[in-house]
Image 1 (cartoon, rainbow, N blue to C red):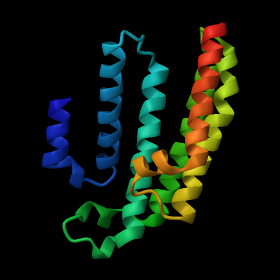
Image 2 (image 1 turned 30 degrees about the vertical axis):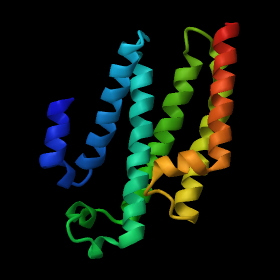
Image 3 (image 1 turned 180 degrees about the vertical axis):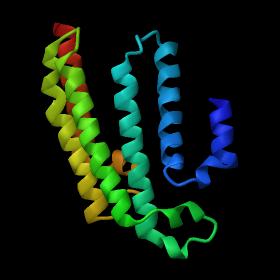
Image 4 (image 1 turned 90 degrees about the horizontal axis):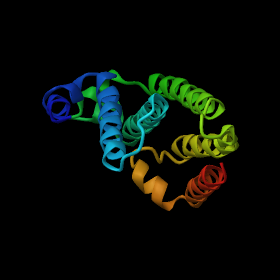
Length: 171
C-alpha cells in the first residue's frame, strides 16, 4: 500500500489512465484491509465491485476537473491535458456498465442469499443519479460532497443498507 501510494505521489499521478487506476487500486487495498480488520471474508466480488465503484468515482472527479478548469488552462495538472471530456464520458459509460454487471452477477450468485438481487435497483439508481449530477450540474469534482448532500443518493444508500441488512438477517 505504502509503495503504491508513494509511486502515485512521485510519478503515477502524472500518467493518463494509470492515475485513475491507481486511485481505484488504493481504495480497494484500503477496503481489503478494513475487511480483514473486522474479520469479514474478502470475496473477489467485493474487490471487483469496490474497485469498479472507486474507478467510477475517480473518473467522475477527472470529469469535474476538466469541466471546471479545462485541460488547456490547468498549469500544474498536466495529466488533465491527456484527457478529453469525450474520453472520460466514454470511460464512465464502460465502467458504469461493468459495475452494474459485476454487482448483478455478484447478487445472482450470492451463496448467502440470492435475494440480494433485490438491492440491484438501488445500485442502478445510485449510479444513474450520480451520472445525472455530474452531467447536469458538473458535480463530479467533489464526490464526497455529493454523497453527503444529495438527498436522493443519501436515501438510496440508506435503503440499500436497510434492504441488504434485512435480507442477510432473514437468510
